[in-house]
Image 1 (cartoon, rainbow, N blue to C red):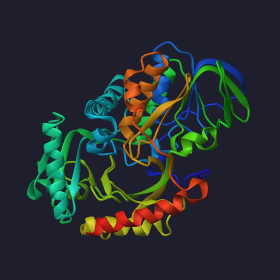
Image 2 (cartoon, rainbow, N blue to C red; image 1 turned 60 degrees about the vertical axis):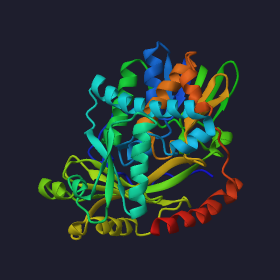
Image 3 (cartoon, rainbow, N blue to C red; image 1 turned 90 degrees about the vertical axis):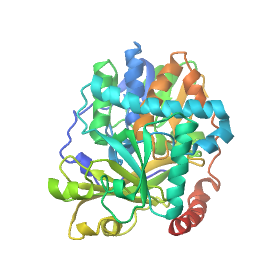
Image 4 (cartoon, rainbow, N blue to C red; image 1 turned 120 degrees about the vertical axis):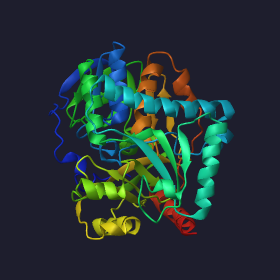
Length: 426
């Protein structure tokens, strides 16, 4: 099933401009072609160009149009799958390597912002918060595991009184703060990585949807108006990979997720609800996540849709969720409401690998792509250049196709999700 385009421009897109890039016309020859103009694709193009490869990046719409430019903008440590599950799937050593690579992803985000002067409104600190008493115990156990098993000391517990210094809401009982995680303007960041790739020599073509590719010693990548002939191909289409690589699309599902931006609150009111300007996310399965914008709005995300259909009265339903957290904002109005698709895997672990010796792919970030996608691009560039050890740590994670095939995978998952919705209520 091909996903429809998101139905509304995001708040990020208003006031953020980028250079108009040409579409691919005719035939070109490069060392490496990258499909997808999100963070992963732009990072792959950047790191390949820095290594001296001639690179062409093909984007179906515009750079940052998909999840990379629409997300909640939270840069978070770890993966979307638990470390205990990773230890069972790949063993203790690889699970620890994967965790360490997730921290490298945070460091890479910082270095790209610094080295290329990317103005993307970055702010440090992220807090996972507990809604239920059992979740307080879960956070404490998580904190202990990170300290003792993974030597990760950037996290610590916040009891209810101290938590009020980061989020003033009676809904939350405790928190786990990470000082290395944070939040940023995702579209500005994605545009910044794209500009860095171009400055390094990569060519980016927009409005150039890939229709198919022909594998071989030389790969031929076809769009409606052109062909790229290349020695290597990197697939970063994620939720939009579709018929270009059906064997990949069966392993991921494009899930709709939604965000509202309030009208400007003013600095005083914004600080009254989020005093430290940390990003916040609860640990429900269907979670709420939120942060302040640079112009003192509240950006509030939550809800998911597994049906590929945007929920009706989206702004109203999201506003009700926000008011449950912040009753003090009961009179605040919504200025923007939008959604988009993120790619999840069955296990919620990322899915990297090869379809051929010269065709690489990265996908399945499952909501942790803001930092991890940048690292994925770097690792794909390393692997293409012949140093694949780090890429292959991710490639060893086992993955299964979603059950139900094209017609029934979404209905079956929607039924399964009712269990987790009920669990959030307990």
